[in-house]
Length: 426
Ligand code: S3P
Image (cartoon, rainbow, N blue to C red):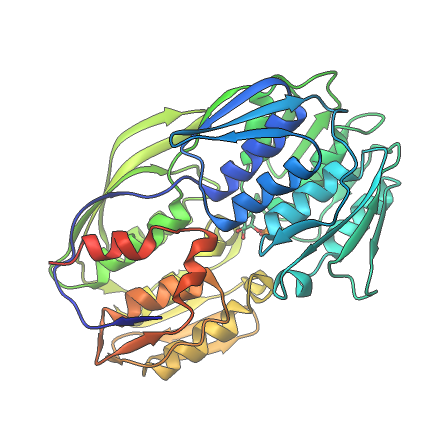
């Protein structure tokens, strides 16, 4: 449990942990590659550790040192049938991406996670994988995990995805590694492209053209040395903390600013934020920068359309930021937020309302009238890491005490969160 109180003048410099999406992919592709893959900056959060655990259960040797993860890949056809259920924990990324890989193996296995994971929609991957001739069964018959996956020789397809989801796109592309020709995916808006970038660096022929991408099944993937940039989805909490907490000035180093992820920067700029990017560079095939944020007088904005996938995980904390901006902020086209680790539209709204904010949840977003002062409340975060972190920042900008009973759930993506938050306080 954590108790937060009103603060001013958050000051300091921090380096956020490695990107969660990129960390997962590095372990997965390293396992399927020939030779050794070293991963620096790997996020040792519970989600990525679930991915490591699954591949170990399929016979991949993975070493962990202080500085790096070393994956001893066994090639595209080197996985062994696991002798027990693959436990995917809370991780949607592990589940959906690994399902694409499992669809192309010559064994059957079962995937299952925690209560939240086992209630998230899996039809979105069952549909394209069945089109490719894989067998993916929802054991309870509710289109959710536990899933029983039986690998088969796969047929290449073009999949016109109804949803802008990198997990769906990646699942299909990874199954495409094992298909009998070129597999392609079109999505309604471009979602994060880490799979495409990293598969290319491992030697696969992946072609991107607007919202479409395709993969040719490679003979071999080759082990790489990967440097994982800091996670902008983790930086988001400190960006918003710096902008809304009076007197603050925070430097956040080594943040991944890939266009398919950096929607929050554009939204902050649209709202009048004092946010500067410097030391822009490329690391491990991904653009990276340091950020400087200072307390700012924010004004309302509208967040909608094709930018949504580039900030989907940041929307709860963007909703909080809008409570501190003058005027009416509208967030729409974000229906996907309802099927994350929790229903984040519902949960962010209820908790913000409990703190006195003027927030109306809509079917696909929020309407927020900024400027109402917040007061402390007890936060029900339903074990959702991003809701817990959002309300830590809210609590530091509210009168009285804010209590977060399930504060440990931040370990899913950001084990050092509380410690780093503490380090900024005067
Ligand atoms: C992720 C994709 C997004 C995101 C999730 C990580 C990924 O999910 O919300 O935290 O690593 O591919 P969707 O693909 O469901 O949008």
